[in-house]
Length: 330
Image (tube, rainbow, N blue to C red; front, side, top):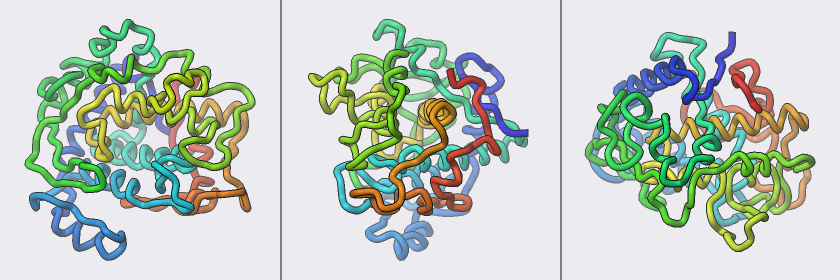
């Protein structure tokens, strides 16, 4: 049987399995130290270097490293904010592969081959008054821990951060608690709403379009969150996926954002919206062969950047039914 991904705020079982898996992976030694990874990765990744203290890293840390490395790998022709995992068509298939690999690791450490990554339908909390969104059922000792400050309660109380992104540099630091600042950024009035999700799923919307970057209007860029044509006065403000990262803040802000388990809940909801779009409009990916200004490394048959597990192509992940399904895509 395949895994079923459930709403974390509606399923106590999904929440408990996820948190148990997260805690286990954050404590499980990967067998690598930062100095060993420098020696292994520097020859194959131009300019790669892990700064800071030399220390053993956990399996959880390797996912943080993988995400950060992908952000340093540009796609040509160069465009602002575009790399081999973000800012272009590859955003959704790359993160689908990334989520799948984490899901498989959680299944391994929990011994439950049907454990699915839960999603956070932030449009539900986005319907609450802005000053109440950081106090919803997602947070607290029974959930994901503190929404602001250090996370020191609940299942994530012993969780430790070891890798932190600073611009284009990734630093190994003395282990510390996870940190958040939910709802404190004055530039983000609140979480995305149900109307935002409807806008992203607008009928007839193409997957992506020329110039295949953060200025393109298509489904991919609407859910990634670089544009919102409905609000020209807010040009440049984060929307959808981007807005959730900024709204949570703290360790969800930099390129090392997979430190926070909320990263996966956010991306599972984005993946759920993509699945709704695929099921309705057909399992189509753009750019196609010979497309104008198509970015390198982001074609249907291009291998995606991976550090864990077998690499996949966008064509491999357009139908995820062999691995998982969602309890609902409505």
